[in-house]
Length: 511
Image (cartoon, rainbow, N blue to C red; front, side, top):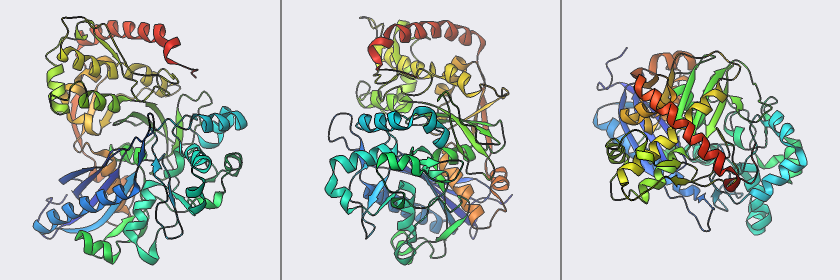
């Protein structure tokens, strides 16, 4: 193992283009974090329930991150050898013949495409959609967003020549000019609801019903761990990167986060925390779930797949609370600290964390909204804060039961991303779940996964599995506390009663 960060050492960059921000890491080739950066971009909401991004904001955030990381590397005498980029899967960016965006990118959190999603489900059927795509059809997926755009923005649609993912949009800019990227990898399209996972191609059957030609999409002919080229000269000049930086093809953020947690072998589990919470178990084969409870798609590791069960509105519920009722408290760290001053059970206050819906695990409620229950005059902001944290954690046991259906029970979970930075927050989750939770040394797992792919693309490490073994290091183990486990088990019954009572008011259907 090298002594990380010595002058003259080669280093790599990992970028994660998420729902609300781009996270970047500068890492030694042994996985030691040397610097981290985060650049937020706005989520526009021109109408209630609409959520969309300007793709140029993604590129601006990327350039800013690379400029910062390049300065850090230069000041320390380090040489950036390779760069990996991974990104959210659901949105599409429509590009004209010059590669410029012609319309906003509709986010996966957007709720405007109910009619289009219902049309696909009616014409093709949920069972067939699951069989082809491996994912449960829900509002927010990319093909339905394209159907909406064609119907409501015909002038913009007429200008479109390509529909690309956020990752491939930014990757094209990184490579630049005549080397503009015109391919994708098999992990990035996996939440579009238009991709045939087993055949590794865009589904003519689905796209015909959607009224969209397959030629609009780039072919999935590249692998995440391959090199796509080198940073374009103009990008190197703008960012300060060396001109010979190798750029990996990259892939989807959830799969990359699983890699960044060190989960590369069948049965290993990564628990991702962010806008939503993705529970991912590595499998040896594509195993579509006919019930729709879990998704199945390829890993960024050769020959591996992932079974994922997702909880909607976890991080987004906390973000909503932090920006509204708890805006005066400060950041997330201060909210968690305030919550710890309230007792377990928040003195009777309960929170159902459905601010962005609850279409997925563990309740599968269509049209759900968030709810506070049990508030009385003596409750304070500390009680509400604790209720938010506990309400999110209460989604965990049922989701875990769904994930491990038919599988051996792993001894340990690895939890990654922003929430993993708080031991107190993690302790609540371990107590509610009744299981130990392992934290990695680097919690920005998707960016770590991107860096692992970069080292493989540049030939620094011989394979993705070897790279993960050398770069991903284990951190603290948070173990459940017995008396708290018992208290939360009793409280969970009350939460389940709440959901059962409110279900008719929250849902227009369900699984």
